[in-house]
Length: 177
Image (tube, rainbow, N blue to C red; front, side):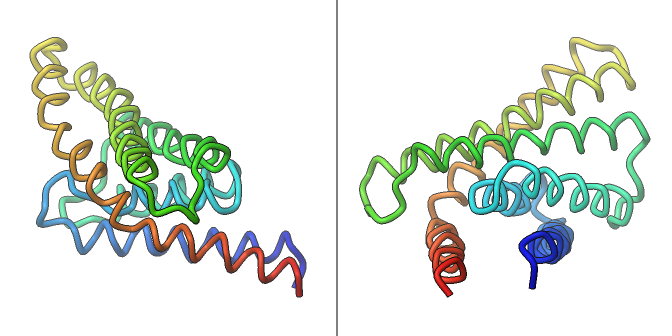
């Protein structure tokens, strides 16, 4: 299988996983393991596959969730906001050493998870406040509520570190075969 076809298949599977994990976490408001999947795709396969996973996965989630489809400006802001998770994942690959089970790697992943949630919600909450008005009260309330996402990401990312190790190690094995 060519490398390009392999990446397309991985993006499709991970985008579907983003949708599925988002759907099953619907009862836990603002707790979404989909952020980790986008981060992991960026970490393991690079910026473009990570962005593809995020945009496709969040497009599916935003349009086919139990609460109904998101309004168009919110949909676009969600797809733009999630690209930061792929960017952070790609950047983290250069700084994070997976083999070590050190406290530093756990803190680094927690910080990466927090930043993924923060950058996502800055974009989404600004657009939400702009669309629904009054701007400042809505923005402050939205960012306060978004702390749930940031804290949950800071917990989820270090817990799922073995998934990152598996993805990277599997890619190394594939390259040698």
